[in-house]
Image (cartoon, protein in one colour):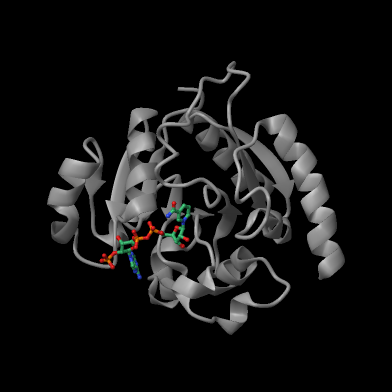
Length: 219
Ligand SMILES: NC(=O)c1ccc[n+]([C@@H]2O[C@H](COP(=O)([O-])OP(=O)(O)OC[C@H]3O[C@@H](n4cnc5c(N)ncnc54)[C@H](OP(=O)(O)O)[C@@H]3O)[C@@H](O)[C@H]2O)c1
């Protein structure tokens, strides 16, 4: 455990939500998991798929140190944003038109996470965990001193939130590399080299510099 034990809320009990929740339990965090449905509906799933985590009603995610949103992006408007107010929120969501359908708000120059933060209201949003496959998250975790340790990019307009999330990412077994403000999240979205690959922190920093130049030149 490389950071203090946190209380982690996970909104979404699908592929990503359960994988992140399992890895967070393994790291020693207290994990609560919820969907849009009553806790009872995911209690058995949680016991079997995420042992050690607690299934809760979404309202009971309030008060968590951070809340991870792992909901399909095309459903973002159905998220109960009241639950998230005042929290540090991790946005794992990606836009992929063949799955999400065409969504005008994500076809512009902004990062999908800028649109999401605006939608959510009073949250400190951090974009990360979106560019690692749910199946890789548990098997690609490495100790902090491992030279082969994988890096994950983090972007946010809130430095305190970014620091908290960097510690959390580290506790999951990954180097957190600061990509800059939320707008820089575009450099590790779907279709970028970072999104499609596995990188160490050194490689990630070089790619972020190049990707940022490219996406901001295109904007
Ligand atoms: N697949 C990957 O490897 C990967 C990796 C990183 C990031 N991502 C991104 O992560 C996001 C989630 O993907 P996924 O594959 O985990 O999706 P998924 O398996 O379809 O699971 C989605 C979960 O979200 C819940 N949900 C739906 N609407 C909700 C709402 N309004 N409030 C609360 N919970 C809600 C669903 O609950 P119900 O069953 O009750 O609807 C379900 O538990 C996507 O945007 C994806 O692009 C995917």
